Length: 278
Image (tube, rainbow, N blue to C red; front, top):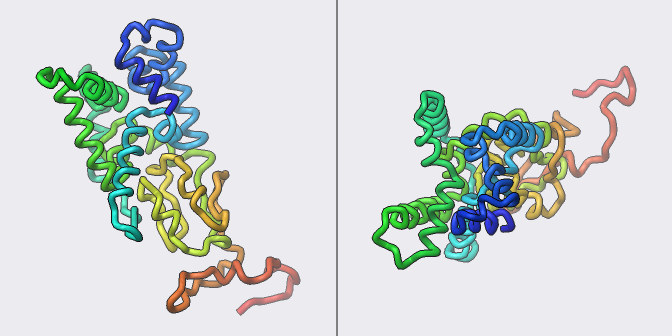
């Protein structure tokens, strides 16, 4: 919200961008930093994404704030007890071509393509449209309301789908976040398969019963960790594995699946060198 307020000031008061704080906020956005040749900020976001994943999308991107608000409104309109989100496979057939096409257009000299799809630019259009409702006749205001309607509708129904399919910044960060050092991880020994994390995952990237998270789509909002009743979800290096990998999970009738390995004592399979397990 703090970043959203700051970027709103940039959109509504151009002179604010000429101040030190305004210039810092403008360069904090990835596409404006690329356009301005601010190599430090570009390298900064590459480093942050390779270390902590897509925190830009969850905390700094102002359009992401709009999508989160629309997603919350969409959840409020659903029937009580209805599922909010489910796992969905990545739409790479759309995400990869859009990202590649926008990148090629930028390097070919058509930077306007990247600028039009820039989330900070789209957010500025929305803010100007909402702040000046009397100027409906102007093209920028009409475009702003159109962007708000499109992005809001997608977010209300499918959360961060726009981030993971159409947004070129999200597409670029998705490639980097695959190799991030720290990531959201689900400990299968603690997971009780209540699916509450899946229910709140706006990126629809948590797959059960595999206990896996698609790091290319995860925006590091950490809603899943806050919702987990058994502290099975953390941000860590690497991934947990079952302590007893030979055992399978059993789903009792009429109840949620439970992990047998979570119910057994923690002991080593290699207690005796001559011990065998059949």
